[in-house]
Image (cartoon, rainbow, N blue to C red):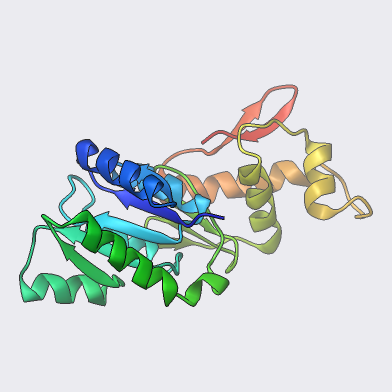
Length: 225
């Protein structure tokens, strides 16, 4: 299976160029032109990330800090910055290498191949689910973050979030959710689902200021983002 390379840069002309080049080299390119799109692409489990530093909004250094504890793959910065302090900052935040713009495609390809060859962390990469606004579910660690802040959930609350988010957009009634999360042989009542969703909504609203679980009246619930 081809290695997946996530290209994060606000210059669409550059991401189009790199995407075509990497595809011709046998890689599977993933593209994001802003931080929100980058977070959404993380659940596709890239094997390597090319990350521009100078992006509007959340810049590459901040984005690297936000995602490094959730992805183990190499992160290579693409940047016009060349000061020693910039390099130190990027490496301290979890970057693995710097490629200074302008760069040759031949050098870029060689750097990518070198990092992929010696990357042993792929075997232990965390599995994550994300939303474009910064909510991140680390399935491996069973932890939930909104941007950099962790949100505490009970075991069943986390199980319920994982179930709905895994099948985002699909509507499930209480009975189906209860069977999936509590088990078909569980002793209890499916009404417990409503109370757990109330608690989850309260915690997510406090952290992110919005609801992610939508009630479809008379039918059930779905993860809406």
